[in-house]
Image (cartoon, rainbow, N blue to C red):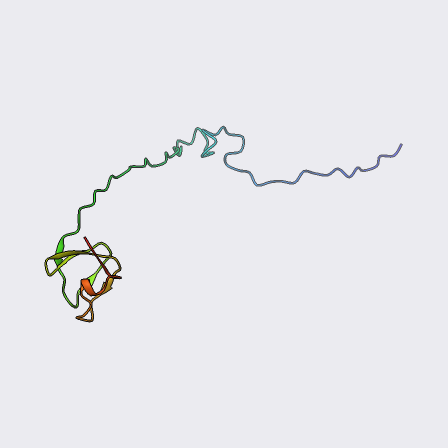
Length: 106
C-alpha cells in the first residue's frame, strides 16, 4: 500500500492577545486580574434638582431708546405695564398706552 500525502489543512495563526488565556477581572474592562490595572466601573452622575426661585422683575420708568424683554415691568405716568413682546423703543410714540401689542397693564 502506498502512502499518499494527505492535504491536512493547518489552522490559521492568529495574533496572540496579551489577555488570551488569562482570567479577566470583570466583563467591563477585560483587563487581566493579575495586571493591577483594573478599570473601575463608573457610576452615572447623580441628578440634582434645583428649585429655582424667580423674583419679580424690578419696575423701572419707561424710556425711549431702551430695550425691553418679555416680562419686564415699567411704569409710565404712574401706571405699571408688563412687556408682552421684546423690543427696542425707537419711536417716542411707542408709549405703553399707545402700543397694546407690546405692553399690558399689570
